[in-house]
Image (cartoon, rainbow, N blue to C red; front, side, top):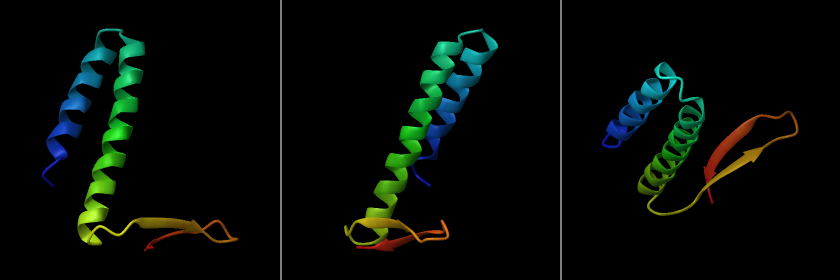
Length: 69
C-alpha cells in the first residue's frame, strides 16, 4: 500500500520513545498511529467505493458489518 511508509515511521518513532523512557511521547505517537490507520482506511474505502461512504453497522448479536451507503 502506498501509505504504509508513514505507519513504519510512526512505529520507529514510538519504539525510540519507549526505549528512551519517553512514555508520554510514546503514547501520543500511538494515538497518531491510530489516526493514521483510520484516515488511510477511510481514503482507501472511498477509492474502492467510488466516493460513496462506507457504513458500519452492528446487529443485535454484536456482529459488525461494513457496506456502502
